[in-house]
Length: 175
Image (cartoon, rainbow, N blue to C red; front, top):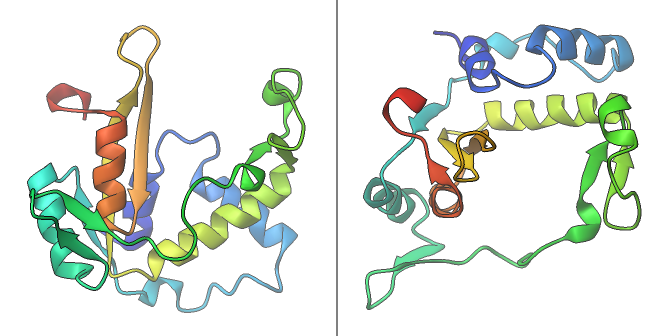
């Protein structure tokens, strides 16, 4: 399976098909997007829904400079200089569905569809450059009638572990 096929699979369920956003991006930013050689990228290893024990093991293996076990056996990770929330960095795409349903202001800042598409392409290019990616399939909300299916794609094992802890992991037929 090519990297493009895997990314298409990973991004399934988003509002915009990958073929649509890429064409849109090409039309908006032809001088920035360089398609030559994109298929030559080494495909990142995809680690899908690892168990907590496996995630800790991989964090210690691949992030040894920033991860360690405490004397109680908990994983302790140093996340760097930027810690905590950044509420002023949050953006919401301003479209027909969101326009009248969001309290716009200093925390809920509007983002144009064009900017979203450009940032999405940049994020995917970044993911393409990683050695490994973690995929966590989970749910937000316990009630099956109202819960949301969530797929997290991240580069750090401890991020995957954190998201698994914050959400309800998908299992069996839910995958």
